[in-house]
Length: 184
Image (cartoon, rainbow, N blue to C red; front, side, top):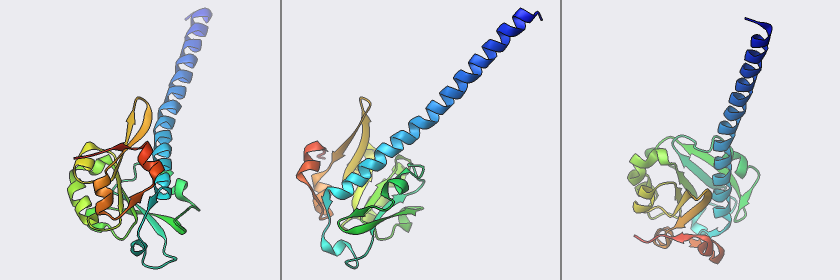
C-alpha cells in the first residue's frame, strides 16, 4: 500500500470511528433525557394533585412513589425525587417486582413493559388513594389516572377525571388546564 493510500485509509477510519462514537453517545443520551423528562413530569404530579389525609398512615409518613417491574427511568426518577417533598411528606421511591408485590404508596408508575399485567396492577390499586401513572392506551382503558406520551416531539399527558375521582384525588386547576382529558 502506498503512503498516500495508507494516509487516506487512516483518515477515513478515524473519521468513521469518530462518527460512530458520537452517534453512540447521542443514542445513549437520548433515552436518559426522555427518562429525565418523564421523571420531572412524575415529580410535578406530586405537586399538583391533592391526596386525602387518610392516604398516609401518620402525619410524618413518607410520600411513596413506586414503580412496578423494571425501572424504565434508569435511576432518573430516584434522582429527581432525592431530597424532595410532596404535601409536606419526604418523597421515597420504591420498586415493586410485580402486581402482587405492590405495597402502600401514593403514586404508582406502570411502565409500558407491564401492559400485560395492567389489569391486575390497577385492580390492586383500585379504591385506594393512589395516583396511577402509565405510558400506554391500554393503561388508560384499564382505568389509569394519568398517561405520559410523546407527541410531535413533546411530552404530553392525558388525565382521566373518572379515575382521579375513584381514587379520591383532586387535580389542581393548573394540572387540569395542561392535561388532555381522557374519557372512556
